[in-house]
Amino acid sequence: MIFLDTNILLYSVSTAADEGTKREQAIALVNRDDCGLSVQVLQEFYAQATRASRPDPLPHDIAAGLIRTWLRFAVQENTVAVLQGALEIKASHRFSFWDSAIIAAARALGCRELYSEDFSHGQEVEGIRIVNPFR
Image (cartoon, rainbow, N blue to C red):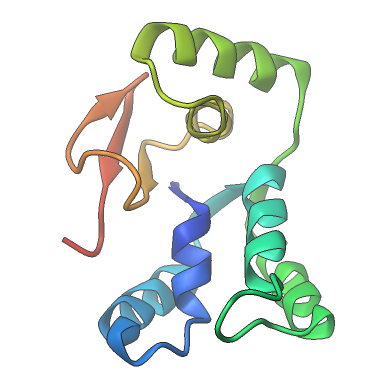
């Protein structure tokens, strides 16, 4: 199973002309059946996708509908174990807390790869390989 970070979901709905290639790659990823997400990723998606200052904000109905669609994936809840894992990862690897929580959620789901453009491609953290699909 692969874990999708928030930026993958956001690119999948982007209408920016300069993000066409990333949009296609992101859509291909969200069309897979072997994905995992976390509640944090879905919350971040909603907050960013509907943000009024976004050039193309999604209406609530569309964003909520997409989230319902993505609930077909394995979704890691926010738990005390994920919180503690995030704190350990932050201390060990010096990522931001939120990035550490993404890694902790991916680990809790048993994902072997984390798809994101926010980390170094090819890096391995806590047994999870980072893949930047846009590089």
